[in-house]
Length: 496
Image 1 (spheres, rainbow, N blue to C red):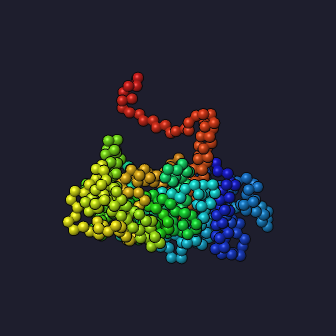
Image 2: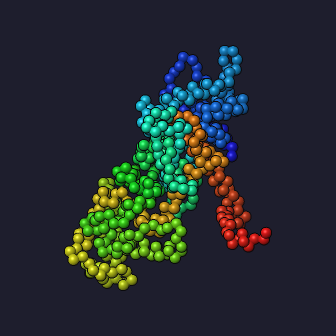
Image 3: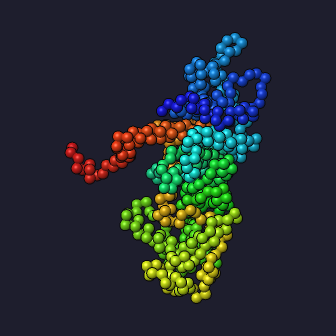
């Protein structure tokens, strides 16, 4: 797919990053032919053409433009002895100035404030105004980005890329599930559809790159906090157990303070009963009646190969567990406190300690052996829950309920984001894709990759919507994906 040059120029201009970068560059004695705006445009053209992130490719993309565009962008200029076309050394020189201006004087494996602002503004400008408010839900994840530099030899730390470090990644290849790599962690936040709302284009809205010795979850929290501070509303944050297992102060608490609602998979170490609060059992982010059956409190998520019978049984147990949950009767106040009430008071179960609940029909669960010495959760009408109770595991839906399962299924959009930028037929960011060292140039190139990906997603989305409109006018249903699966039985039945 060919992306028009005007679209890429509009993204750069709407972001406003080019004048800010130029203000950071030193004023030389001689006139610099290549501007920061044209350099970023060349980087975008390279990625739009599925070419590797080489400065030689940037130079080739710029000098391949039509003559009027070269003159307008400064690629071709009139010098003392006549017209002069941009050289590779000039592209290399301007790129070096930009990297130095956006980098840190003392590199520490994290991007500078100037670099993060440039990436945030470029990605935000790549999303058209009509899609910015389409959804507030974000699916987040991180992936590996190998540096081109060879790892340091055993017993040493010296290498060509001093900011890179050893990290761990999970693979789907035969053999061990995990392996080590030398490079960086790329984190991205992808727009997903709201619950019970139509689908939206899965656009990468934010990204960051850090060395592997830094925590990618903490790095992404700062990105999302800046996003909220810029006026972008945070809604559902869909994350796997790699984020949920972090300390509450590193992930859950800052995001709740920014207005987000967490929908995440719990780490096996965080599932099940984890202490009490005034007698109520803390489990999976909620408070439950002290007499809740233990098998229900140990209920885990469904297996991937679960049969319809297993799904129905699991959903029934989840519904039974929700009846024993202390119900939330107030929203969180400014300090994060809320109040809950006994499930018997709310009419969800029958309990002798709450005489009024015994008049309910016998279709509800009944507490046959109430505590001999009832705790506060069984004697008080309501209970105040401070923000530190289940701060790490509290989320929007009960875990592992069917509502949570259906909502959490949207998180796969983050994996599709990384799949599209690691596609061997398109932009492939595997090792060797970029031979520039250090975090700053890699971050700029990865931002360009995600911008080009967003434009392809938007083009495919517009084509699909136009096709659905055309089919609806003809009285046909929307086109659906055809999943073809060849089985052994079909091969055996096929004629030779």
